[in-house]
Image (cartoon, rainbow, N blue to C red; front, side):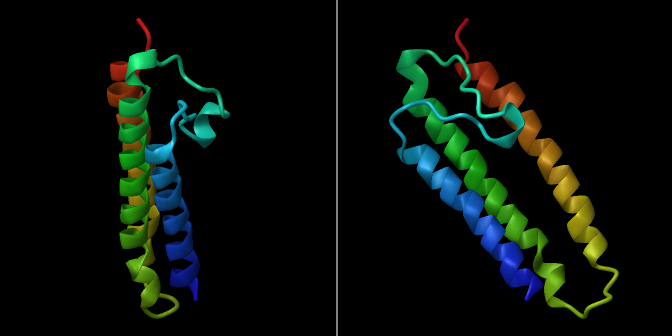
Length: 108
């Protein structure tokens, strides 16, 4: 049951990624930007949304993969893989967004 809920959360992020890819207007990155839209050059909005959508889809996919230890027995020590993996995944997502995506598409 825990893995099902975990996988649904991962699919929610994948859905967010698909929404970002299909969006015509610039999309706020998510929960750590407080919904503020970054200053993106008008000609790059579609590319920015596509890059952001790919980031969210990858995040959701790897979130689901990190939940695989939840399929094991109840008191399995493998849950540490999930906990530590999610922390590293979040740090990587924030770094990729801040350095690569926002750095590339921000107005100069």
